[in-house]
Image: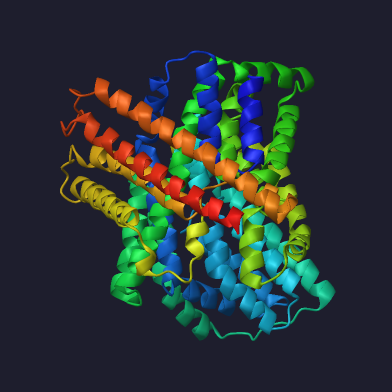
Length: 424
Length: 162
């Protein structure tokens, strides 16, 4: 086991891609312990030959399509007409816009690179501090994977054998809470620093902007509504969402040419492969963890230091926060989930609730150094150096930790909706 | 993970054969899944093959896309080492990493070939096509990835020399 985990960490530390690091450490283990290696190839194959995982390309595609068309601009102008009038209005617009965008996209980076570019530019023009704009954009982008649809939750669902539909629905209330906490901190900081108010818009203007954004606002009705009503499986909802986004682009907005469609398809293809090849290799790695009884040992160790569920929850969260500082979200879900599943079951923590806790926790990892995907993306978009980007994000970590604590300690926050809609 | 989505300078001319094959496979998955949803909800008649076809398409996409991501260095990795090391040391570590990946990919190719030998007469449950058509896609993807990795190592060596 020391060989397996030690080689994995060493490979990751020198910068071997996650898929290869998982594969190499597993292969070395199998050679040393004389395990039939052909099983590994079959496990890789079977690991990605799963219907729920077909949601991955479609949710990626839907998000990419939204970003490539003018949907993002329309969402932004709608949010401006609603929230622009308040003090620090563009800050509230930033949060609200991300909340809407999150209902169509499954990743935080899609949000930051699409909507984020518009938001940062507008906030700078109106005299907001760059650091406030950048930090807030990073923070609000983390709503993406929490509000359904969510790529991270599809992956967690497949590793933990939990219903993706339940996970999606469980993320809604925590996502709204997080948005609310961001509105709160925007309000406090705006009053403190005297950020400007925007112009108040008349009801008519709000109505026009709403109508222009309506086709996009209708997407969550299809995805979330369709799943909660039991019409679609999450995979089918993903297909329908992608088709809907494509139809909007081609028939309504008509601003995509062949080149941009191919670009979107290519980006979706590459992103999907990068995720799926990690999934494939993690299955082999996970099987060895089971064989080595790593999860049992870990559970025993954990339950020795933590007897109450809340203590287990705390210990796991600290572990995830540290992992999140260094590693990618999907990679952590793939590596850590099989190890901690028995501990969760032994201490009676609901797997759906923990899925939400885990995703929320790992979102903090996206904006904490030394490795944070959103930090890299935003530093580039805002042309800010890395250290300044890190500092910009710090004020927004507090509300995220607060919401994380609430969701971890109060199960009904995440479980109320899935219990109502799925478990009767 | 989404390094691909930030390419404002996207040019069709930069796409390589594996990219086009992968995009086609993605379109095929989309078509099959859309047909499946359409038949089930609109015509009330489930297609038996669409789900299986899409799942196997995803395997093609995965391993062909692995090639693309190796060429473009877009695989997920921890890049903390880049922040710590000096330029020259970084090149050596990169070479080491690329050689490790090459060995792993070549090893996987070899094992996949072996398993295909055992599965020669197996067919898939719904479409009744040879299972090796899918393992073959996996092998083709891994083979191209090995090739691209080799080219990358060539680049590494050139960088080291200059």
